[in-house]
Image (cartoon, rainbow, N blue to C red):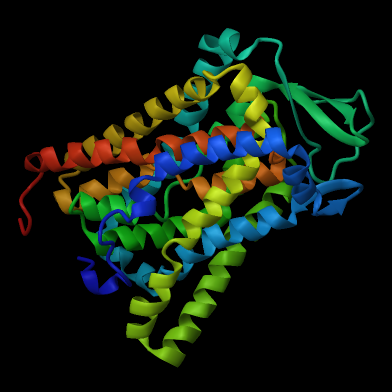
Length: 397
């Protein structure tokens, strides 16, 4: 059994930022819309500070900086050496990997397609379109059809015009292939789960994402007729997962060697705690400065996106939770196994959507809705776990 010695730092519960994350996101929506109205050029000027390839913006430098600081504090907390201990808990780790990578991406695609592409398509606007970035590495002529989109010239830059509902679908797909590797430490702690096992699963999921995120993302986006070149996904994973992961691993190792583990845990991590949320909220203000008009013209947009995400979260939780019971796992292992699949790594999803489709895209907006519902839905599932501990064998049995 994996013990608590594997855990760098046990969560103490929700911080002020985490507890009121939904409220902070709502404030960011308001601030972003206000910024878009008062100074519409500010966010656009920041987003124009980019690395260009073939005349098209590929990486927004300000957003890349924000997103790096969203990811680095998560990665530096993980003791990847504990991954080797996972063999002692084969069933819960195997269950988590199976649900996260063999089931969750495909149920997310199916549920989002049903609701956004069929049931809610008329509400979203059957003929409504969205302008997204030209796929990285492609230089198609204006008027060329690519997937479900058409290449158009917008303000002197080639863009891909796609159905708006498909853009939202892309954001849902990116959420569905991103199992949580940060907040799940909090959810597992609140549900009184095995913190050591949670940490091991976080480390394994972080490493697995380096391989499977691009593969599944490329496949499902292609099926959804929003094909993205593989080099774009590889670049996105490299910048937003591999870079902070390597930086976290190297700096963690160096700081512990230089300052000691007590200083690293009690001082350094304490300073980092709010950085992820602050970077996230900064990114959201910029995002909503672009999407304000869409929301104001159709305020139910967020609801249409939130419904399939809510259904998906509950479906994955109950599937993993009931499978854990069928496998006769202890409650302490069952709770985090279900939580890590139910929650999403929205930082990576936002980062990838922003890079692939643009800060102003419907795909980016859909990933933000994932942030909006994350805390209240996961707190609801924590309460369900605490009320069903009797479903599982007592600790030590």
